[in-house]
Image (cartoon, rainbow, N blue to C red; front, side, top):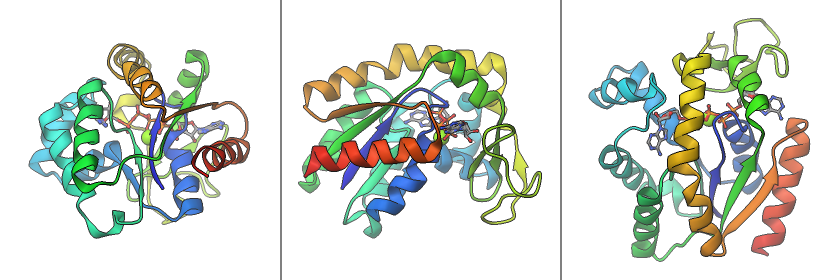
Amino acid sequence: MRLVLVGPPGAGKGTQAVHLAEHFAIPHISTGDIFRANIKGATDLGLLAKSYMDKGELVPDSVTNDMVKDRLNQEDVANGFLLDGYPRNTFQAEVLRAILAEKETPLDAVLELSLDDAVIVERLSGRRTCKDCQTSYHIAFGKSAVEGKCDKCGGELYQRADDSVEVIQNRLSVYAEQTKPIIAFYRGEGLLISIPAEGEVSEITDRAIGALSAAVS
Ligand code: AP5
Ligand code: MG
């Protein structure tokens, strides 16, 4: 299964990706998580990415495309992958198509999670993220068992710098202007599956697995 997960910031891509990756036994590749791991490690890539991410702007394509190409050449993606947060504009979608064409491993499906802006702001402004494994929690909808600590690895929870109300608004604009066009691109390729991202996390996972299994069987 070779999948792309697309949807506005806060739609629940990261939350659902964990469950979908487990169900289909494929690696979860989140470009946002890779950039944040580089920021934590104070690498050159991290320093560069931070200057864009803190404002809610996209990291330049040249950097992002090379990073994804390297990741897709690693051994664990031989049986599939779930891309979360990439591609994020039409050029990235074209580059991804070329990378996969060269390997003769085209995408099976692109799953769109759709959600209203008001719910997005509520979800993002209450999000807490694990510093170590990047699992997402929510102060009202998905608390960790021990406040401030990750259930999975015990890491410290923090609020992402780009989860302030002003930066969320810019991320929504960037999504509408730069990312939304890829929905039409993938619809044109016959790969798009759209599901509503409202409801309980487990309900949405079941909806996604049902839609994906029906589409690729
Ligand atoms: P990235 O990390 O990809 O952020 P994003 O797209 O803005 O999406 P989020 O991670 O904020 O939301 P999500 O959909 O994963 O939601 P989550 O599951 O956490 O990118 C960050 C930045 O990196 C970009 O702005 C850009 O600068 C850069 N970048 C990344 N990729 C790039 C690329 N390809 N090109 C260029 N730049 C790139 O859920 C959100 C909250 O809601 C959580 O608190 C969660 O607990 C809660 N929640 C989830 N589901 C539910 C539910 N069903 N009910 C109630 N609450 C829920
Ligand atoms: Mg995410």
